[in-house]
Length: 336
Image 1 (cartoon, rainbow, N blue to C red):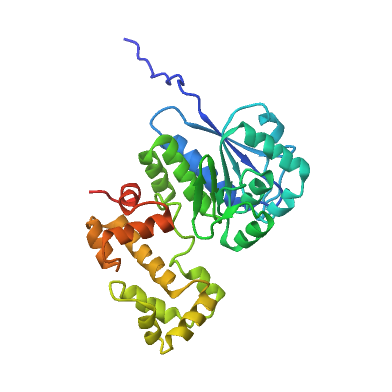
Image 2: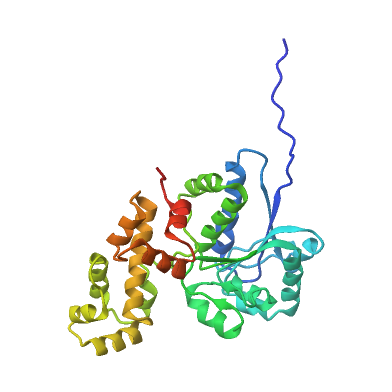
């Protein structure tokens, strides 16, 4: 009796097109990280490969990266009349120079009009800003470039801390590895959280860091790098006493300063008020408990010093644009 080998299933679903835009002197990881996510998603998905990826440059020329490794690419013009599911502009030191190339920006604008979803990694946000698509939208880039993005394109609503931001169909991500987080979130949106989890495990990375999560861990690293370290011990003490009364008078006593002088000096050096720091550290601790435990929301709120769950909910919505309950549903690492 003859044996028959199984024939591959005929594809019934058109794969989604993921088009990466590069230019001279990109950061290689800004491209390679997200590209690897979509490649792994093809292997992890239980069905037809869901993605087809393409890297394009202005004229299809070989393009230098910050590592010295040049990349081959296709010309952007081949997509000028084709539908694009997701367009991703990568970042790098060459991003600002790319915004000065009128023909490049015009070509990117053409692709933007063909795309259902438009994204940037790191300073790739500069290119999107120059195109105009970020006008009156929330956006993020690498923390060191946020001031430049805000100054040069004042119509963009720049946010400093999030690792990625989604504003309708436009996504922007922070520096370097944040592009991987954004790509995982895109996969979760397209194919479901379980597929994204498989990809994250393959890459041995977090799944899935929320877009509202700070670019820094702990959350005050950015301010601490820009200031003296005189308040490091205070921050450690706050983190160990979150369920206590942490009004500014108590913090001033802790560092042996008058309340008025402490508030003035702290705000000048850290770029935010003592009260904002306390809230930031409480939210960070609450996120950790929501991700890693099954404690009741009210218990988490009490442990982190919010007094009640309504105060914690308001702080989460104000800072992360998501409620504690929704945060847990989306990001709990091992749901019971």
